[in-house]
Picture 1 (cartoon, helix red, strand yellow):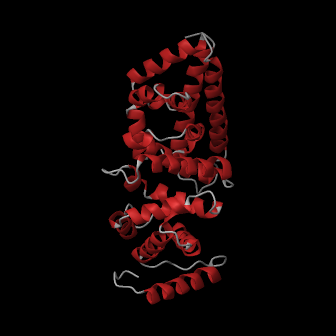
Picture 2 (tube, rainbow, N blue to C red):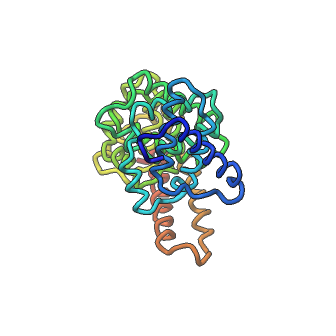
Picture 3 (cartoon, rainbow, N blue to C red):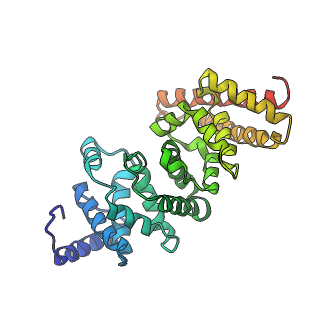
Length: 318
């Protein structure tokens, strides 16, 4: 499949091979995809046909399943990671096909696998020097993603994890953030599931004031509501200047109609404190690494501090 000179007969044979291998073994012992470039080329070819109006959702679904099993459930080895880095996931036909299978008429499972792949290749999609979609397509894509992760999600935790990862990539991009639809901002209620090593997440916290100014310009108010709550959730990670601004806003809000929002943030942080404390209490097995336990306890202390600080401002003691 790596060859550029494959005929229709070659692709038909490839389809039969993939379908035979995966449909027979996916429930028991899914086969290895082998060289990743092969399955990527298989996916790319059928996405191109899908975007042109043909129905190849079955082949696309199997290819995405193979990629998910091999690459998305764990960190790939360096050779696979290098192959992914070199593959062009932003060709017009690839992007058009991915947009097509994100349509709400496609199955939730197919759309979920598509979103998973997007979260894995997000640097190419959302950090591209040239936008890969026009403004209308960006808004449509964001709306379709919102329908998936908020309305149609069945596996809540994993889909929220993927959705939050994509959200921070969009928020980092000056082009994409303009097209975040109002309901998608509520993904930040699940900001606790973000990978704190994710570069887009770190960028957003480093540029918190810029994003505050951006969300203040939003007519629906959802961006400001949820981004400001995220800053309280990660108050301990902000620099002194941002902390001062975050506290000033909270004191103003506590004197007016914003008190209900502050209590919402306090409740969300409190829930994460309780969840993290339970996870710390369960750290008794020998297979739990010492470094993970230390990191988890440090996060619990930070969350408790954030919760306490916001609680004092709400109570009027600061």
